[in-house]
Length: 127
Image (cartoon, rainbow, N blue to C red; front, side, top):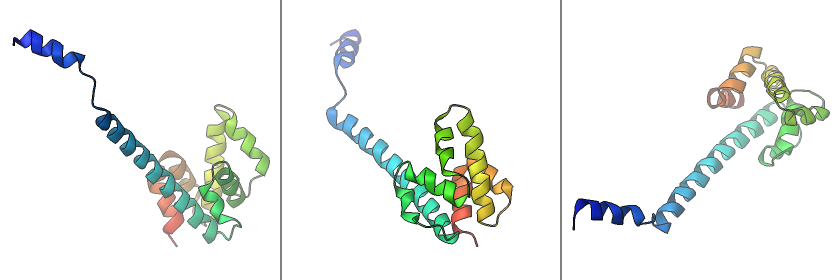
């Protein structure tokens, strides 16, 4: 068998279904872990700020309402999260409000909005 024939044979083969399923499973588990990390941090922040319904951190959309409650912003701001470009400004304002509710400076709200892997655990687990 020549190299060209072997190359043609290899190019015709589809990847095994198990390989595709494995990558998909890893992808799903990675995003579930990220979601759980964010939910635990937001729930802990809600508990430390004595905000009702901390369990809302686990439910999409309700977790945004929970953040608005923690930051003491009006609930109607949730509409602004669905407006492109405006949502970026609102996210910064909400995270600054959350940081201030935790007794931290506004800089920690900015850090959380920009680098959540650092800001979220700090706001959630620091004293």
